[in-house]
Image (cartoon, rainbow, N blue to C red; front, side, top):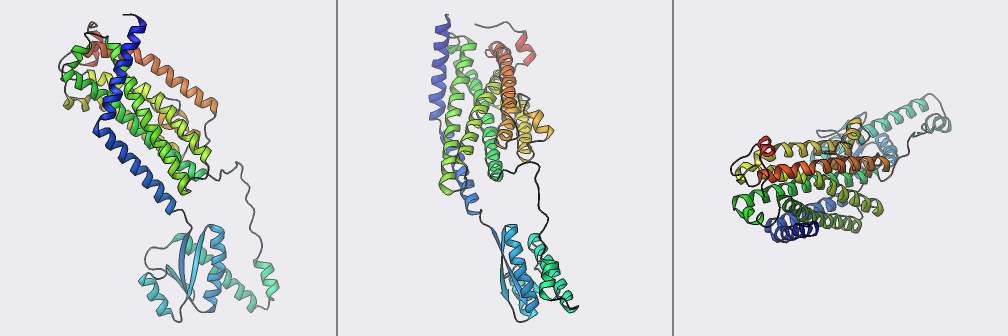
Length: 394
């Protein structure tokens, strides 16, 4: 069979896989659930983006003055304080117990119901201490101007050795969503490759297919068709997520979000190229769906471990673990995108990582194709070592 004919056969298989899998009800349901989850996550993030507001009760003029100073400090710290006056300590305690206020300043005490809002309590304590010092200085005869000169000194300035990216929080959210999407896509579509092989073996369709095309052509077509379908789904999910985020104002850096989507798509292609042939071999080793879980277990653990490292890379993208994992072929697809989004990996490092992953896939695919070709027509459960020993079929 010529190279052109072989490519044509692989494309026919790819088309069949794309169309049949795309029509599958489970594919449409999973796409809908993923879209709904993503849209819900973005909407919840957009609703929860406002500043935290606390309600504080005060009893007496000194407490009211202290709370007003706490209001100014709270604004600088990114939250708000609403002050409510109560005539007696009993009423203030009742308001705290009923949940009408989050805390109350009564004399030298700060009253809370149960757990203490740390940022609120710390701000009220600092303001109360400042007010107590002001009263003590006034009692010793200092004028208001002298007291203000002593207390109202500017805080020390802060000098950052590394520039702070104002959108870093949003970038971390985008990176986490990207890692989650890559994990789901790599695992789901790798499993589809394996289960598709088992289905063909169990129904004996594989024997009909291999009477007209070679095992390597069948494997290439299957991986191509399922991979393109996964890519289309991923692009749809990414585009929808970015559109909803921009529409709700959750993202204010559309170019960064779009670039993150590109990273996810590219690394899905690289990761799927690496894992798909391994999943195909796992499927070729068994003849029943019930036995498939055992053969794909090592691959599942590998992807789960890579996902865990990828999540840690979102939290600490400059760590040694993240840097090393982004250069290892099986974990790079779930680690490098987040490091790129968070600005902790250079384009050169990304190219090196991509080259390593591509090189590993190019080495792995022929080996996996050989094992697939020798095991796909064998009935029962085939050990991987035996698959390499058997003579090639067809």
